[in-house]
Amino acid sequence: MTPQIILITGATAGIGRHAALTLARRGHTVIATGRREDALASLQTEAAGLNLTTLRLDVTDAESVSQAVATVDAQTAGHGLDVLINNAGYGQLGAVLDVDDARVRAQYETNVFGVLNTVRAFAPAMVRRGSGRILNVSSIGGLFTLPLFGVYNSTKYAVESLSDALRRELRPCGVDVVIIEPGTINTNFSGTAKASVDRADSAWSDVYATAENNYAWAERMAPDPTPISHVMTKAIESRSPRARYTTPWRDKFAVQFMNLLPTRLADALASAFFGLAKVDPARLSPALTTEVA
Image (cartoon, rainbow, N blue to C red; front, top):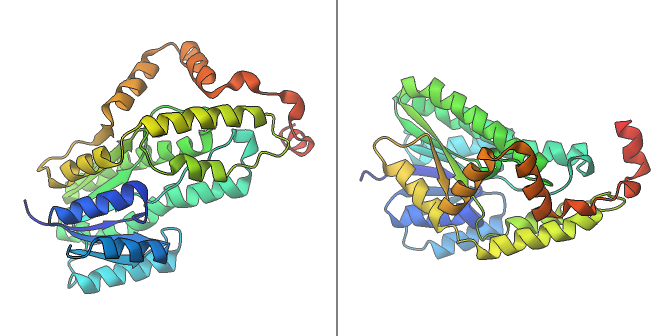
């Protein structure tokens, strides 16, 4: 195995942090990035003795991305990255009619435009060199849409499509593009998503508690990020990586099963899991009613 120079976004917690440490322990040179300086400092301490450095990077900020490129060029004597892992992202919970424009745009700025920003910044060096690899972290939510996750899932559908196009466009240049599709993982995903919900005057107010309890239970039963770090390692170290890696296996099976069902039956199962029978149209906010009329 040849050690690679790897930059990973969103490495301050969850999947990103676990992957950064895993890859550094395998002997790769890892540049772990994120927005929270305190979390980066903690990661640097935990990575003592490993070839891991931290760098503050906000994927939604053009100047921050440009500074990161300059730092990487300086650290690598102009070589650039061998591998870019686009992991930065977060979940926005909420019925589509409950999520206002500002939150939708913020979700897309990080989950979609953040990917575009870093790819456009770091891929040119790979193209000029004729080698490199880009791992874009999508989700099983980019394969099957769940109630109350419509905004978040739509960003992952966008990442899937962009990655498919990039894979075909960059392969002739020697650059592989791989999609990583995590299922339910025991991280703070549900807590972050829950904190971002506005429930006032929502027709789905009573649904949220059921949905959150069920999702939190599924998350507690789920594995830690180890399976994701494992497939990332395979995607980086494999001579010929697959186009996409979906894991854990039970979530991969569940998505395949749901996509094989008649749409009405799949809808009924998803509705039951999320408690959508509790929707109360009478509680729809007057302002929202006016907007959609």
